Length: 456
Image (cartoon, rainbow, N blue to C red; front, side):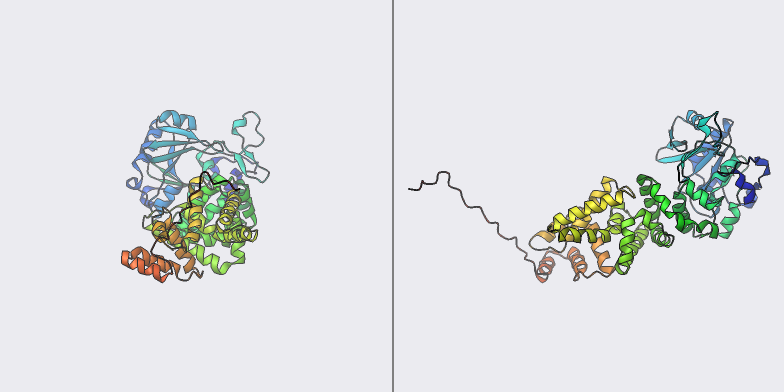
């Protein structure tokens, strides 16, 4: 069946009619998708599009997750209406996207994404350049506003399990690419030639990792085979887009599994090049350090506790920072200036791979700076440090360093006890740590005489 579908993929000049496809329509009695599990707002959009005379289907991850008994976070819709027609139909909508035009229908904080059916590429078309795709020298799609039929849209999707359509008219599911079988077999398989599809959009390699860990699927052999070789293509993706992918990979509750798979397939280097170099040199500390941080983050997400990209980036870049920091100190810079120079240098390098918004970059540097301050507890410093806005994140970071094997002379345990202690106990802790509980006297400047006597 897949061979029949390849005629629709980029690079194949043959035209095939949709009637030739092996469309499998699964009636309501043979699947578990129910309207009761679909967002009310998504149903509103589906019904209004159908009432206006358009075809509209729930598509992609929403259908896939419902079939797996999961609760989808998002509901996407595919339709034969153009983006402009959808936009006119919904006053609470906006047009977005350059590479491929989409419509976001807004209901408070909930966004229903509506996409027009994508069609075949026609690189030879001259009469309507708006329907011609554009690719880079590496095969990556730069413009893709090519509209088509539902069958063409199915084959243009990335993985078979994302090419399933739920019809609100008769509650059936349309399966063009064998996605239902792959769901039953718990296998992730790309549609078409893997190398071509990865070259079109290298981010699909990251999506393969993310879907495999999220769904607990195995990646089909043909889908996995080219990934390591094509991993460098990710360097051609805009850094801002890769930052968003990093958040999806490491802040979705499956960060630890994603980290391990990214390294297995050689993809981490494209996202964190300096980190991968450092891990090659110092795996004994670096790998446990990052894995423990990701494990803690996954647990916090499952417990609905807040997490921040600043902390994760501080963890991922800690080893490269150590190397750069040592270089700066060797050049004669004292501790804090050397740290500031090293931090800025590492952030600049990382930003070339994945952008780091300032709202995360500043707290990340503060977490690093606190690692220098936390050992210095003399006088009233401990009391001041514990009230610092980044203390809790810096303390967690410190404990991670110790649990990964870094020798800090029990500093993490000291701060653990200090947080729990009363005033009397804190004085005892400071005394044991060799610090004074009294503020050192300030030295007053000597008075300067305004009119000193002239020398004779």
